[in-house]
Length: 194
Image (tube, rainbow, N blue to C red; front, side, top):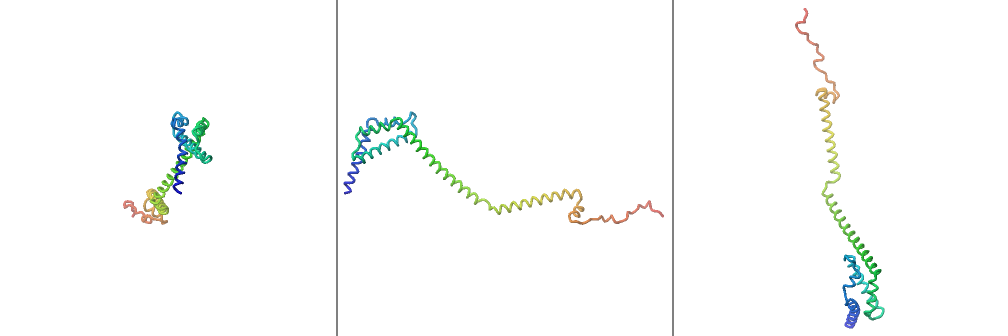
């Protein structure tokens, strides 16, 4: 039973292939020239592949509907219709749209892959960096240190105007008196009266 199915499948494939081969036997490159533009590009190649796919679909549909493959005249009628300027324009437009869709998909995938790679790299770098609270404490301590140094500089400048003793008294709220301020001035001996 399986041998009979295999034989029928082989006959069907030959029936499908024979009209395709017969129609292109004259000049297989002529159909490509009918579809391609003067400067052959990727759109021309995709349009030709779409033409070949439609031709194969035509033969399969014909065999499915009539049980026999189309004769060469029927295949040539399909070819003439498929290579009319409007049909060729349609093939080229479909090829352009197919390539645009393909390009967008490739770009989306590349963008997602690149974004994922950079996100992983960023997370890796962030894990290597210092934690936020530790950085915050270091910045607070650095600012306190800067304020202390600034206060010390201002104290030195202010103290240089007042003097060290007066500055000490001024800062801690003491009144510092001179020891000699309470003593009577001593008169010189030449001015002494008897």
